[in-house]
Image (cartoon, rainbow, N blue to C red):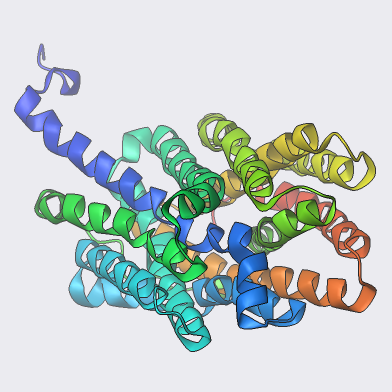
Length: 396
């Protein structure tokens, strides 16, 4: 009785720390290849001759892949194993970044689809891995996981343009350079693969009944709406700021600021959410914070930095809550995997309409006011759905 789990020898704890680091490094790769397009979008449009609608489709393409390919993640996991599927996703991410280094519009779209497919697998399976292997530290690990995602987005938004300028890189090479981060994750994941595999269990077992669950649909719709506004604003915010007179590097740094303040929400929200049986007020409060930030962007020119910081806090907190709902509203890793697949399949298909619609509305109106007001209105149903999904229930 004198021996406790906290007294495990160092040799036993190190593999767990290695696996945790592998998860974090994978998570850091879930946004840079997508977010890096935004600060470069003006140059891409000029070089490739893309309209606002076509550019909107480019930014929506990876998000559409997140949704359409999410159902393949549990299937691949059942067939070849959770860890091997994640390793394949990292390799595909490297390949997609390499394809985008080719100076051709076709390669840009093909590589972007490959990047979206790779990230789709990680989006679905990493939360189930956390649920399985860190069952007693789910809140902390979900916080670190979503924090790492925001950190990757902040890094890409802030340094893509400055590094490209300093190194004299064209936009296609600037996009491709993020493959180096994915290569690092592959190298780290290879030894971790053997450690994780020994932990046993599977997150890929088939679970039925989710598509008939009202609660599952509420989690799914919440995921979709918060993602739609996030990816729409992330895709076009630099263009909005450039239209107000900011240069592209500063606009990228503003986008990075949103991700940096979002790290706070990413870290705090899962820990707080896991401590309470209901998360209804948390969901409504998060939507209100994001709405205040976007309203400031629209109505208070000259205070963009403050408004964007508030917006980033609210939007990233909403993403963290959406991911945490997948663990809270399910009972084990298999259910988390299936709920994650459903929420991201439908949710990201909904989300893909955000960047496309915002670009199309800009083409129709010739200004950013109407698209931004539409995004602002989306926070109302997001708050309502978050309130419903925050009830103390499980999906099946």
